[in-house]
View 1: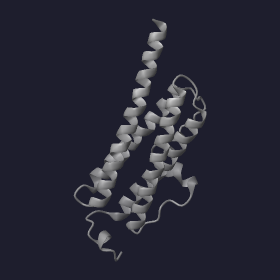
View 2 (view 1 turned 90 degrees about the vertical axis):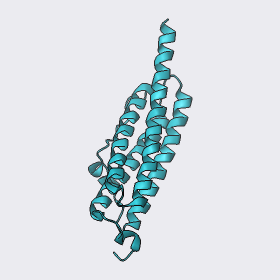
View 3 (view 1 turned 180 degrees about the vertical axis):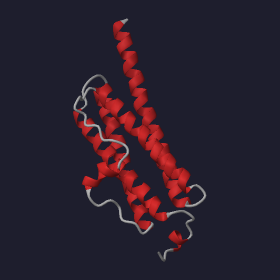
Length: 167
C-alpha cells in the first residue's frame, strides 16, 4: 500500500474491505430483488409500487458502484463472482414467489432493515478513522432509511385502502 489515502487510515483495512465486499454483495442482491419484484408485482397500487421498486433498484445499483469503487481505492478487489454474493451477504435475497404487493413490500422492507444495520456498522467502524468510507456509508445509510420509509408508507396506504373498502 503506497497510497496516501490508504496509509493514513487508522483501522484494519482488510477487515474494512471484507465489510465492504459483504455490503457490495448485498447491494447486488437488493438490486435484483427490487428489479424482479417490479417486473412481477400484482395487486392494488401496482403501478405506483412498480415505479418505486424500479427507483430503488436503480439506487441500489448506484450503491454497488460506489462501494466497488471504494474497495478498489483501498487496494482491495471487489467480489468477482456472483456465486459469492449469497455467501458474503447477511441480508438474504427473497424471491418474489408470491408477487402480491404486500408480500413484495414486506420482503424489501426486511432487506432495507438489514442494509441499515450493515451501513450503520460500517459508519461506526470508520468513524474518525476513514472519513471517505464513513461519508459514503452514512450517505448510503440515509438512502436505505428513506427506502424503508417509502416502502412502509405503501404498506400504510394499502392497509387504509383495505379498511376503507370494508367500511
